[in-house]
Length: 352
Image (cartoon, rainbow, N blue to C red):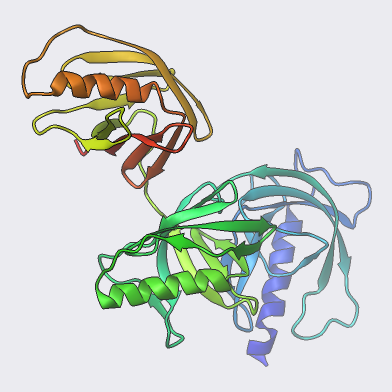
């Protein structure tokens, strides 16, 4: 019986904590004593009641701490990645079942909803655990990395060996991936098996949760299929980028000449500067989402004789920069592409 009543006891305790703040500054309730103001956190948290549960975090004032909220708020459609302010009608129940909350909660109004914390589409996510073919939740293989990013109705990433691309439809917490395409590289059998399972589970995904710093994909039966954590990625601004390949202006992309270093730094003030191989250059950049415009550029006027081809490479690099329209960062790599999607310059973040 103690186990059966655990959830009800916790729920009552949480409600008591939330109600103890009463009318704090900035969250005054209406004249109706049953109408309360709640703030709801952008991520959920795991707890234990009758069994494992995942709960909202809520508080009654801006200067208090979030508490586990074990009950449902009827009419409230929660989407992770947003901080909410809600007006809620709280009603004390009669003849409360032993395993139920003493209170019922009914949404009156979503007063405010603003982006906060981690979001499914503003974060690069690295796979941590997945449901294996045998049905157990397993960690990914050591020294393997599967990750994804969601933006503009598309998901891109790496399944472990191959890069993949698919469409994605998000509505609230519902999640649906369309058929994906991928590169056709081969890797070790065990890694290919993990990759195949990962892509299969994406196709079975029906919704998602963000719990703490974990992104969880679930199937239609709300079984967790895939667990992700934020993937560390370089940032465009203020990082020092070393070019690894440059468009030669003839439809091809070439690696840098041996012994040459080409760099770029994008400043917070809208400037871009670096070394084009022989000379120093500087100019302006403008960023709008993943769109970027670079130029006009100016540079010093030195001539370098060695290595052979360095001045031609420099000219190609500067022209390529002024031709870009989009950027994309994957881990520590940066790609700049033109309006047709053709790669202009690829970079790796400096490790110094």
